Length: 315
Image (cartoon, rainbow, N blue to C red; front, side, top):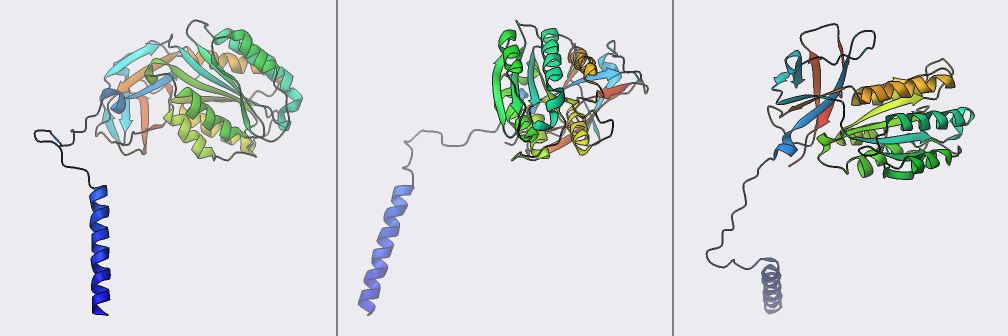
């Protein structure tokens, strides 16, 4: 019996040594440096940029402020602003997300016409691009990022209402698969324009997952509610939450005739921007969300509309 056990033990030991030899890399040739390179952080990784608007209490844009008027707070600590610009001509990367579910069928034609007028008014064909997504039970990419106005108009006119509502899936897809494409991010103004009642019934992703992806894509969400009942709904609260967190705004036109004014307000915001760049101190590369606040420190009567935080890279 001892002989059998010794033989089995020897066989197991030999097999283990063979497997170790197969998985252990060969020794490097003499003179080759095998040390790991020191981790380095590039400016593009650690730099945070924040696009924002400033208005007075009557909603009028304030465009004559300087870097000395602002402060950025992250984790209760003031940050040093390394670069400041007043942006009016950044190339736009826009995603137009149109709810085509049954819940908005009555006013759908008016929404299509208003969206086309907005597109024609805001798009500069040499520099700007827009994509079109219709969403009911599932989101559908009707037109990819393009400067072709005719193709976008044809896509809008071809949308037909019917089915459930997958708002969160549409936001998630547009941010992750499309709006992250053009780099570097700070050279483009990214925004989603959502036309919906905000009542999601079909999405696989949650509201906060959709928001997280929009934040990671440095995308501002604007929303035009299709709820014309004059009473607040859960969907209205969803639209307001998504827009507030990303530095956008939700509009609630009570009549379809007011849609054009809502679109005009969005177009004006896209052309009246400030841009701040800073390197977070202390630097964090934990992949987590970090709250920030942009304030006008020299005038308490002004309102800043900016995203409320960013996701740090994970290295």
